[in-house]
Image (tube, rainbow, N blue to C red):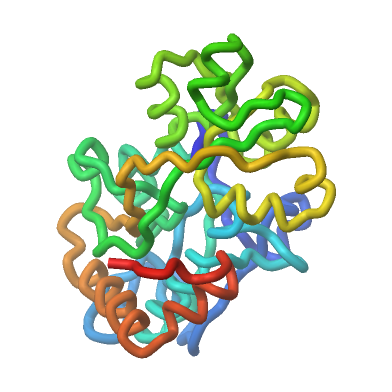
Length: 277
């Protein structure tokens, strides 16, 4: 995920017609009301009856708009947390740069951040992470006309490589000696490949899987090598918010134990890996 576009946060409500990206999402029941409060188990929330999630749209299959609602794998998992807490999930679309600093968590705008976000030591300095909920790899996607399948081939032929700004893909590309074209969102990455701004991109494999479900994309692009960077995704909370972190951990652990996680994985991402640690 990315971005450094500097947009201010946008509270996602149906009433804001000028904000087409998202609408309020719900899970479980709500007591309603404004101002801070407590959810089940004494978990503090920034708005009574709500579990407010910061994300950055779009980032399919983790979070994106469909039919006037924000949906996706991350959204579905956080809905499980909200259900356990007896509140509704509400989405805030925010710049991804704030996920590294925890700015919107520290300011009380959000309870947690969910954005297909890699757990890193640098980010741990500013936020607390849940248990990992997703093991991810990067993938190379190239235009068919380029004839390349690997980063080595892109480099050897001096072709243009793209990545999403502030993501593992961009960091990995730079570590391999590339100066990738940085795009502010996953949609912008795909558009850059479509329009020939770049010849290949490196981005999260599940994102590529989603793109290739579209017949036009499958005809125009080819999936190249997978790049295992060892990244694992987590949800983040304000440092010291142990009650909410524990509630998130429990929801993830329970979902994996009772089969809910696998069902959501298949629904939003695709076939389960043959073996998952």
